[in-house]
Amino acid sequence: MKILLVGVGGVGEAFAVMLKDKPWVEKCVLADYDVERTKSVLKKLNDDTKFVAEFIDAKDQSMIEALVKKHGTDVIMNGVDPIYNETIFDAAFATGSTYLDMAMTLSEPHPVDPFNKVGVKLGDYQFDRAKEWEKKGLLALVGIGVEPGMADVFARYAHDYLFDEIEELGVRDGSNIEISGYEFAPNFSIWTTIEECLNPPVIWEKNKEWFTTPPFSEPEVFNFPGGIGPMEIVNVEHEEVLLMPRWVDCKRVTFKYGLGDKFIGVLKTLHMLGLDNKNKINVKGVQVAPRDVVAACLPNPATLGDKMSGKTCAGTWVKGTKDGKEKQVYLYQVADNEECMKHWGCQAVVAQTAFSAVIALDLLHHKQWSGVGVLGPEAFPPMPFMEKMESYGFPYGMMDM
Image (cartoon, rainbow, N blue to C red; front, side, top):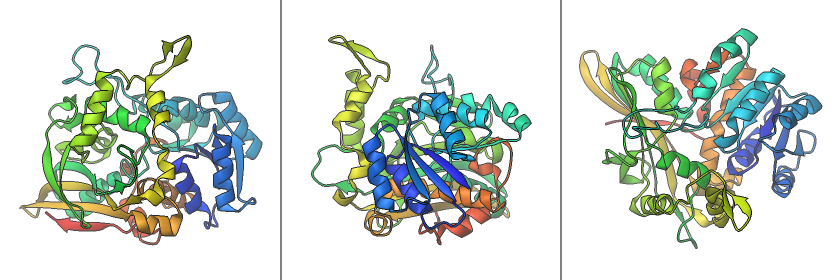
C-alpha cells in the first residue's frame, strides 16, 4: 500500500508514527504546506525508505493529483481541516485513489431557520457523489477517526450483537485533560473546534429525520469511566448523527461533548466578536480570515503533549431492548496522555483520533473490509476492527448503564 497523507499536523503525525512498523505499508508521502513541520516529523520517524516529505497546497487539486502520479500512491489519507475536503475528495476520484478522512465536508446552516432546520449537512457534498464513486468502483471511507469513526463502529456492533431494538445512539465524549502554562489552549484544531461547536447541532429522529437545535442545547450529566467521572455534556454538531442512521436501525441519534463552562464562554465570545468568521475580511489592506488569526494566536495542539495530563474518553451510549428487557450500555475507549506520549510521542487526543484510520487501512489491505461508493464506518462489519483495537494500543471497554 502506498499512501499520500495530506496534512502532517498532530493527527497526521500520530497517523504516520503508527504506520512506521506496519509491513503492509510500502510508502507514505508526508505532504503539508508547512515544510519545516513535515521535515520535523520525517526526522522523528527516522525512516527515509518508507517515508518521504513533500510540499502541498491542499486547496490545489492539480498539486494533489501530481503527487499521486509522482509517487504512485493508491490511497489518499485526508488529515487536514475539513475546509479542504472537497478538493482532496475530488482529487482522489480523479486519480482513482481510495479516499479516507476523519471529518466530512462542511455544513451550511439553514438560511432562514438555522436552529430548527438543516441547511447543507455535513458530508452532503460527498454523499451527493456516491453514485459516481460506485460506478467507478472506488471507495471513499468517510469519518474514520475516533469520533466519527470508532464511535460509529461501536454503533454497528451494538446493533448487530447487543440489541434487538435501539431507541437511541448517543455519542458521548469527555475528558479531564489539563494543559499547564496556558489559560486557554485547545488540544485539537481550534479551526475545527469552532466550526463544530458554534454551528447548530444536528439531531436525527426516525419520525423527523434530521433537525437542528441552538448550540450547547440539552445539557445533561454523564458519568465517564477511566477516573474521569461525571461531567456536563451538551449537543454539538458532529458527523455521527449524519452517518449512523444511514446504516444502523434506530429511533434517535445525538452527539454530546463535555466542553465546560469556560470553554463554552470563550467560544461564545469569539462568536460575539465575529472572530469565528472563516471568510476573509480586509484588515488595513490585507485579506485575512478572523478564524485563521485566532488559530495562529493559539499554540499548535501537536506541540502540547508534554504539557498535558489526564485522560480522554470517546464512546457510544446505546439505549434499547434485548429479549424484551430494557438495556443501556456505553462502549468506549479511554486514552491516557502519559501512555500515548510514552508509546507514540504524541498527545492523547490526536493519537486517539489517528488509530482508527490506521486500523481501517489494515483491514482494507487485508480484504477484511471492502466496498465501493461513499461509505461510513457503520457500513462495515465491526468485529474485525474491534478485535484489532487492543493490539494497536487502544483497547475498548463496555459498561452497563
